[in-house]
Image (cartoon, rainbow, N blue to C red; front, side):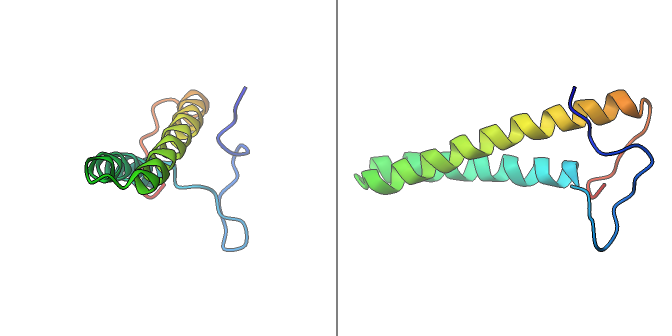
Length: 87
């Protein structure tokens, strides 16, 4: 089972915990922008740039899967709790 973070643990300056909602937003932005850039690069016949952007889009998809698993674990551990974008 994936845990979001240790129970009752809060992030500190020395040991911060991930802001999952913010990470989700940034990963979505990366996925959309890299997909658009990959399409534009392939249309402009710049294959190496298209491949690089496509690889980064795949990395964003993997990150989205990890984030969603951690968010689901957090929802399971803390039912009924709403988190802001930066929490």
